[in-house]
Image (cartoon, rainbow, N blue to C red):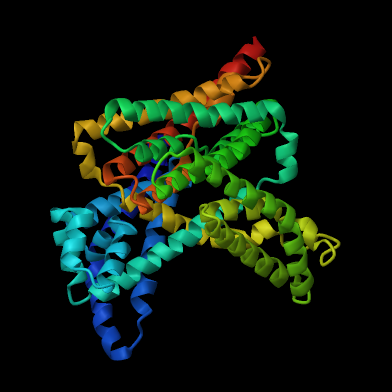
Length: 493
């Protein structure tokens, strides 16, 4: 095989996969409808859910494969495939895609309808006349109930995926590591959260002063995120993950996650409380602090008691049951305290470690918590990213104002993180550190999805934020590699 053919082969395979994926998307509704017809006689209501969830996962695998073929992060491929499915499905009027594309607002409309409100009035008030017509055609159609069942199941799976994603991120860190990263990583993290927030907020106020302050704050908060996974993978490829810069980046990214989640919690609390009132903000900070302090100091005691009880089971069972129950309990308590469930999931990951099970496995030969949780994360998280891609409305970019807004968010996101590198000491490669903090990846998408689910971010703003995530995720890896090569060249000379 020639070099040219070898280079074209991966792209050809990707094109073939996209073709068959598109064909499956177009055929999915008729097949699902056929399945629904058979369900009436065979009384198996779970079959459409199996088909819908498995179909979403299939497209996630296609996106992941294509991204890997081109050397890109998996999340990017899953997101882009979701965008394609959303655009194609909406164009051809595919019922399930129409429901999934509108996100949790569809379920809110149905709940109001079940509570006695007029379905037509609520749909028009929530989505506008044009979108409401399409949604009503699906909901009031012969298979509307089944499509809602599938859409709701996909949404639940994706939410579990986000919880396990944040739990997994927490597992890769530890409270001890956070104490050891030092003030240098802390300075980088603080600048990397505050500066993008301020730049994003200022940009939003200048371009759209009519938008509520709560929306400006939430969009600005999404700019402070950092995807530690993407940067860590690039640093491993370069052999720089154990370098001084690599340790600063990874340590700062962990602190960045905590600061970002704290910012998100405060902004969400301000939105729910109805305004930026000092008393409300202080109560939110007190609640967040109380929850984190309680989790850090009481969490180990709870884990030890769970291990003592569940330790009578097999070691693998004890680990998976303890991990699952602990993350769910903390996520629930976080919600009870008025915080995002993600805060609880991340905190659970920080607290849990192998030391709690050392008496059950003194030789450390059994499978680790991380390895046990990974299958859940691998299966559920891609569903979330595909769903987020489906909710990006490409037609919103036909507006010049939306494109300008997206450009401003991209610039604020990139500039804010780049400058954060100057929080490190002069002896380090500050460009490399700043670029390492740039990818938003999955964390930025999670923030945006929360804003969309609570109705503070519009479809146009959500699409702009997703574009910011895609751009920063795409440009950061090659720029990190370039900065590392430049430094290596200088050292050699």
